[in-house]
Image 1 (tube, rainbow, N blue to C red):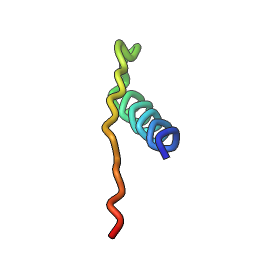
Image 2 (cartoon, rainbow, N blue to C red):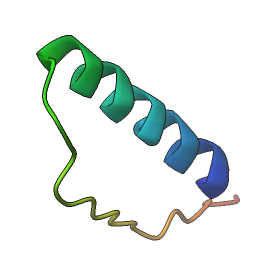
Image 3 (cartoon, rainbow, N blue to C red):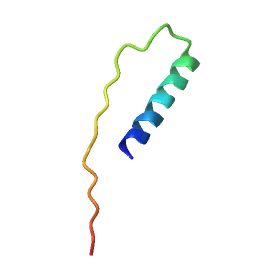
Image 4 (cartoon, one colour):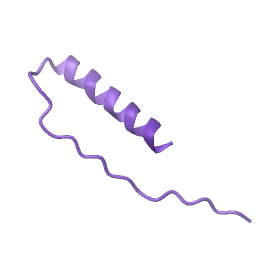
Length: 40
């Protein structure tokens, strides 16, 4: 799940980069949070 989310974020970033027609992407930082499932 985390890897899929990261790939999706990268793809969105690349699409935005192409739309803006810039030379480069300067910095990328991924931040994650803990996902806990609550069971009854």
